[in-house]
Length: 316
Ligand code: HMG
Ligand code: MG
Image (tube, rainbow, N blue to C red; front, side, top):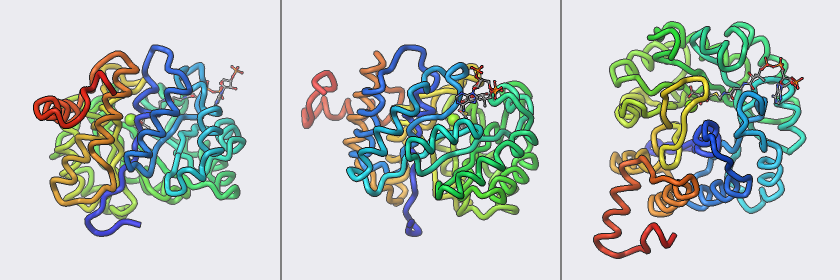
């Protein structure tokens, strides 16, 4: 699947990026975003979340989104569309749409677990057991997330020793990979080095992913730190969209275009067309009434304007 120098990107913009938006975003706009991301070469696009609409209203159209994607799946034979699932109810709704991959999500902090999914860490693992069993029997692949891997918005710093056994537990449960989430984007490369060292003593780096929010501007540096430990999968969000409803002040994931520029510059292949991605970053930002926050979307657009090689963003 991956060569030594290739890095797999998991685009989480349509889910993590949009889940915290207050304004109405139509289902058609979300589907067009996903279509544009696939056209730009993203092969893993987290499309939605089968969570309670009372908790996260922006994801209320999860079934329509997934159904539309599954109906048109022959259009994208190489693209995977995982969706978050917190419990059996969510999985049953996902299965009805033909969804082929889910992501279960736990946290390394007890308080965040309670705020996010209304149960303790141990209860969440028990809750995921029947979810994993049913998903496996339906041939659905399962990814795992751990939030608050370096810090929690309620409890402060989180020791890597709290993360490692949870990562192992999620793999033992049946996840093919565990994504380590710096939910509030406060981590530094030194913390990511310590995290990767401790976690990879229990879990092979080939089964880890990095999910770095960029609140404090450290996400790209944290990616480089994780790369040095052999991690080759990273989650990111086009235009740097996002935030978590249960982590006040946290901003979006590392912008996919910043990550792609970084990785290509380091000699890694991603399969992503940076120009098409930046067009998509400007397009979705215009739909949301603002400009992309990412450095690369702005820099590439400024370069285009200087050289007039592409239509201006307003014409897009
Ligand atoms: P609960 O209130 O404890 O659930 O919520 P419940 O089982 O008691 O049910 C209460 C009501 O919710 C019932 O409806 C259920 O039917 C309904 P009522 O009878 O009141 O009308 N319900 C559901 N509806 C739709 N889909 C479902 C579902 N389950 C129950 N799946 C629950 C527990 C887990 C449902 C809730 O806490 C929830 O939905 N939480 C989701 C929170 C969330 O989406 N957070 C953001 C994503 S995580 C994240 O962003 C972090 C990540 O990016 C990594 C990182 O950055 O760290 C992944
Ligand atoms: Mg996140």
